Image (cartoon, rainbow, N blue to C red):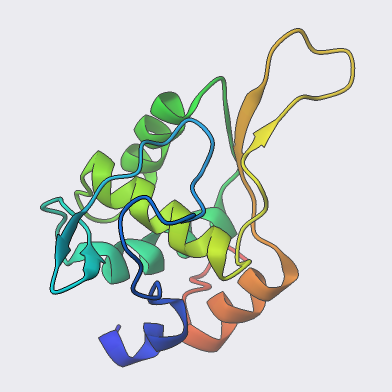
Length: 138
């Protein structure tokens, strides 16, 4: 996977605290360098590599957990590489901004608490196919 493949998924530069969309239950992490927010984590390959892994895992597997922490643990068990929790959250935020995944926090009818799901949108499925991340499973 090349970084140029993810040019459309790179978050726009914003200042910390300026209405940056965020996943409910995810803290807004990052530091400001030259007026731009940069992720503050040490993921293997950074956010862009994590996005590819996130899309591939979401395409091949269903993740439905009680919260984001359990969702991360499930993702980490399925991913081909080690990804930090912060890189995972940043990738979730980037995929939400690009509408590649559905809102992960859901309250199913009749449920007493919210659940966390990782599910691709039709645009996300198209992006997985465009990048050749479908694997052998589908």
